[in-house]
Amino acid sequence: MRVGYARVSSVGQSLDVQEALLREAGCEEVFAEKKSGTTTEGREALEQAINFVRSGDTLVVTRLDRLARSGSDLYAIVDRLSAKGVFFQCIQQGAVDTTSSMGKLVLGILGAVAEFETALRKERQRDGIDKAMTANPEKYRGRPAKLDRAAILRLSGEGMKPADIAREVGCNRVTVHKVLRAEREKAEPA
Image 1 (spheres, rainbow, N blue to C red):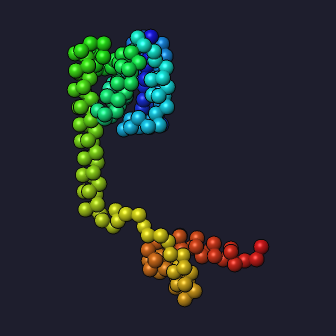
Image 2: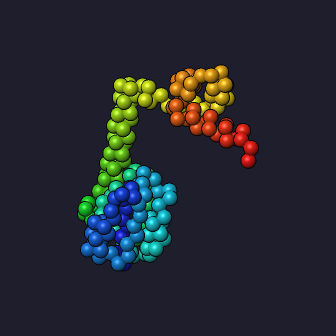
């Protein structure tokens, strides 16, 4: 039996194209999910597909990166399948077919390439963040410190205006108004 597995990373993406390709490839059953592929954790449909397949079956994906983004995850999944006597095929990378020794070699090479691409993507993302932090350090100064409600109340009691309190405490003027309103509501009798 040919069993398909389809995955997209985000809710806004569609599984339709992958599911259609898997059906065209003869998959009688297709497991699909919308989850990140950077890890196998939390990917229920993948787990269901692996549990579903039996010896002699073939798990089919449209592209290798739909199954795994790291070599270690890819090899772990393929090892689990092999231990069950299940084969693995990739439609768009047709040479990836664990029914042959050449397919196993190609799988190893493509797995290494997929891992390399993930590492490059992370490096580019980190470079972009570093560049943005250098260009505008105020915007990227990290998580703001815990709000000092006591300071807001004290400064308000001293007659300071909300906009000045916000600058002094390092928060938004609206936040100051919310703190003051909450304090008034607490003080009012029920």
